[in-house]
Length: 246
Image (cartoon, rainbow, N blue to C red; front, top):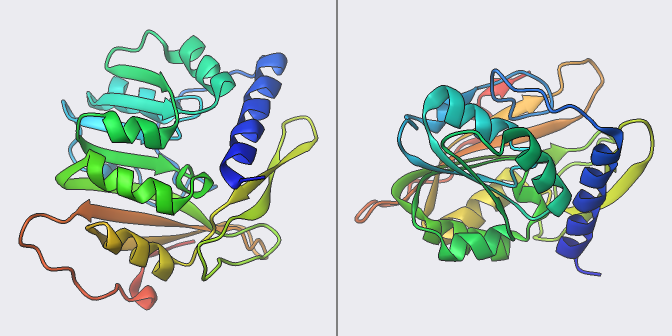
């Protein structure tokens, strides 16, 4: 079975699980790009007041609601899971400046008006980048910002792949149980190659490690911009100089 339908089914089951449990969705007071509250915050998105922003793979809509409420952004929040969308709509459906959208992210990107900022907290790894990145490049205005975080090393210590292939990962459920998803866990260098193919320039990659000793869980945070006309791409960033946020 293809990876993306597996992921869609898993996140629908995940949302249904929390709807059944009646799980409360707390507001956020800062962005958490990794798995712990460390590293950069909302400031890396740049000025968002009055600007068109897309939250890709928005889930419960917490970050999108925060941007609309606290920073005056005009946020579209797109998610393909009907149950996650229902949770977001119930919690944030009346938030001014926030538009909650139930749709395949790529299909939405192909028809949307250009965005000033596109961001994703862990959402990129669930969509085939060969399908996603051309649509992102089309939907991001020249000079616009793309910021996204992705898994790099899972809790079992499995590091990223050097090929564009999806692999099985575990999605735990509150109260016990787990779901299987398939994720594109790629090396930063491979992510940059794919981004560059579509006119997207990587400015910085932050390392976001789990803070506990002996916990291998780690992700990477990409800060990217759409190449403007006449701009020449720089050489690959030096992975040794990436900011380390332990």
